[in-house]
Length: 471
Image 1 (cartoon, rainbow, N blue to C red):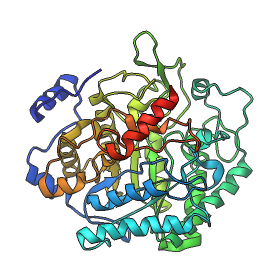
Image 2: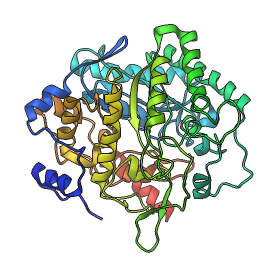
Image 3: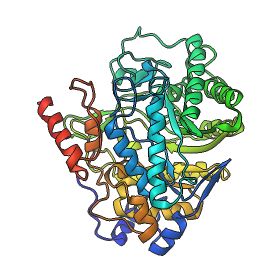
């Protein structure tokens, strides 16, 4: 279903009023947009030269042993040239069994030289254009994919709705407390390697249903890592503390945090739209959910947890929602689903409003903690207008772009130099990038992902091959 039919900003504003999406507002003056988004941001010892971020976007294009490959270097060179000063490096597994796909980056001694070269090259191309890279902040996202790991799924706890959505057998084991305690040390080892590679910030990833996020919702897990919020945040507390003990203040601590999970959705074969799986209330699963109505958020635990993370050393937070595996419309409001997935059950503006509402509430609750906002891409050229309003009003610190950075890596430069984006390059959220991420049927076990519509030379042949071999 086509939703984005707006020819002017005024038409889009009228739609926000019609739908009651009252958290979506726009700055109309392009010169003000330039000024607002050019503001530098301090975070501890680090300083980003403007208020524009590139989200950690996986390319699924590493080597089989987890090193960056040719397309990885190409992608980050494009990001380096693009002008954003917060370049968030993608999910990098802390050990092999934590990879979400066979081409995900994985940091270990053998891949360290190439990962270091990837960072070095990204900063070098940025410096070539902008004169310095000293004001670029580049966190490396550390992850364990948990129940989405390949080839073996590793569960943090049994979530009945999520288990049912993916057909998990009732006797499938949950990772033990002792194994979790050992895994903490793998995160610390990965942080040490990141420091040797030249990174000065790491992200302890806790979103999108991966292991650390799953632990945050493990209210019915027994033992040291489940039950109370203190227990459910124990893993992150321990990792932060161990990194600080090992590396002191050499490494800044960041996090991409899932602040509202929601419930799983499935395709309704009669309508083609997404519908929630059956659930009962109270719904004591997930993180950030209202137990009496999990279709709504309850941020009380989220705020408590962020307060603790701040005490434990967190200096930068990236606000994320939902799971791309079972309710992608919440995390990435889209115009068109990837092949075989459901049409959005809500107008995408409602999803954008949810992002802005939740991020705004959290940013205002912690005004001294810089946060990165998500959910802008569906707004296309008007994302800048919304971003500038949110930054100026204190609803967020950084405007973050994910899919749009793949489609239009120079978006930040145009934002800062012109105050507008090129409508012929901006992401249309037609989800070809996600389609490629989901295709596993080749010799490497994974197709690389990018933007076939706007990066045709490279990804046009790849998506053509993926479709041919799938057929």
